[in-house]
Length: 291
Ligand code: MN
Image (cartoon, rainbow, N blue to C red; front, side, top):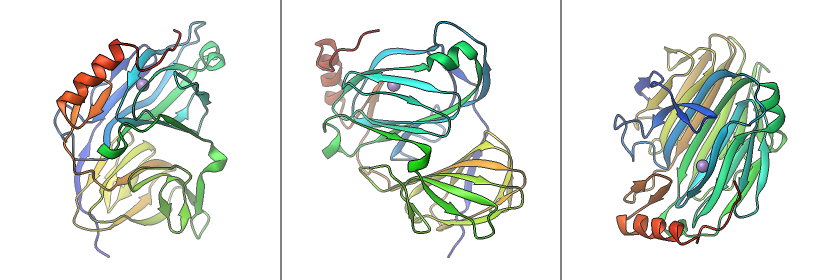
């Protein structure tokens, strides 16, 4: 077992607003620093670091918009998010929960702070990933997976000082519930101070950690909160030692070796498919969703 070398540790880039509800650091594709393929199949990673939203009667968020060619995966760490889409799916993503939306051939959706959370205000922290689909599945029908906390796989460290919540893939024999189109591991590591954990990922996979909360030594390097740790392809093992109580999002996936044509909310292989998506959107083929 060889250790995966840390390739880069990225501090959170300056945040920007998505609509009026999400204050995000875009680690991926990240203004060219990492490139569109470096973390394939993960194309985009928007991280809303912990922020306090004041109470409001008008929920903050993002209005109706389309997606085609990929999946949006939303993980709520603090606060609650409501979702509606033109395929008829509706849900609330509560703290610790995940929504895995397969846009594929296309739909319209809107993403808002949940109503009672908005009225109350409070701490808000979330991640949205865009997971690319292989060409042969880009025009599949849309789908929706609501992954509640109790559905996640749960691996408990031998000395009971931490757990791994398995959203997708498999950790030490514990499987996660998400249905994925390509091999993906997605875990929350929730460790107490002093806990030590060794994780194995295939060397060929693209692998990164996002520090949600607390500090840890990863392969012996101290990593601060809200930082993104990218690993090389030179080994298969990562060692984590929690220096405080920590929450870490672990991402690993088999790269999709296909061209990327990305424009706004569309993620396809060829530019002609982007033009088709724009035309289909303009002619109402993504369905109907009220504001
Ligand atoms: Mn969206």
